[in-house]
Length: 303
Image (tube, one colour):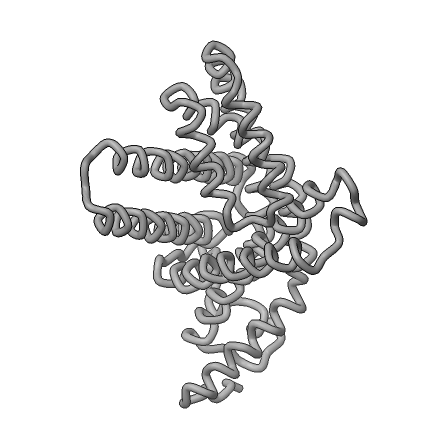
C-alpha cells in the first residue's frame, strides 16, 4: 500500500529528515567515512607532492606556498601546519628535482587517489542503495578517471589561487576592484568544488539511470556543510580539544585524519540527501524492500 505523501512544507521536511535519519543509521555512514578517511590520508601526501611539483615547474616557491596557506585556511591549525611543512619541503627542492618528483609523483598520486576513490565509491553505492555490478574493467576505469579528475581539479584550484593574486599585483587596478576579484575567486572555487562533488555523485556509484538534477542538491549542501563543519572543527580543535597533550607529535596527523573523516561524512551525507529526495519524488511503499531501494530497477539492461 502506498504511503501518503505530505502536502505541507513542514510535512515534507519531516519526511525528508526521517528518511535521512533512518538511512544514515542503517548505512552506518560514520563507519564508511572512517574507511574513506584512512585511504584519503594515504593519498593526500603523494597527491600533494605531485600537484606542488608540477606547479613548482611554472611558479616560484612564494607563489605556491601562499595559495597553500589559503587552501588550508579552513583546516585546523595543527593539520594545516603539517600540510604546509610538507609543501615547503617540496617547493624548496631544486628545479631538476621538481621535474623528477612531478613525473614520478603523478603516477603515485593517481594510484593513491584511486585507492581512496575506490572506497568513496563503495560508500556512495551504500548511500544510493546500489550493489556494484560493473565489470572490473569498467569499475576501475571510473575509479581512475575520477581520480585524475580530482587531481586535475586540485591543480586548477591551486593555479587559480596562485595566478589571480599575482595578476592583481601586476595589473594596476583600484582596491575595490581587487576585493571584487578576490571575492569572485572564492565564489568560483566554491562553484568548482560543488561541480566536482556533483560529478563524483553522478559517475561514482553504480547507477544506470543518472540525472544531474539528482546530484546538485546534495553537492551544494555537502559543500556548504563542509565549509561550516571545517570552521567549527577548527575552532574546537584549537580552543577546546587537547590533541597536543594527548597525542604529542602525532597530534597533527590525528587532527588531519579527523578532518578527513568529517569531510568524507559530509560527502556521504550529501549522497544520502540526494537518495532521499529521489525516493520522495518517485514515491515508495511500506514494503521493506522499496523503503531501502529505488522504486525502479536501476540496472535494467538497455535495449
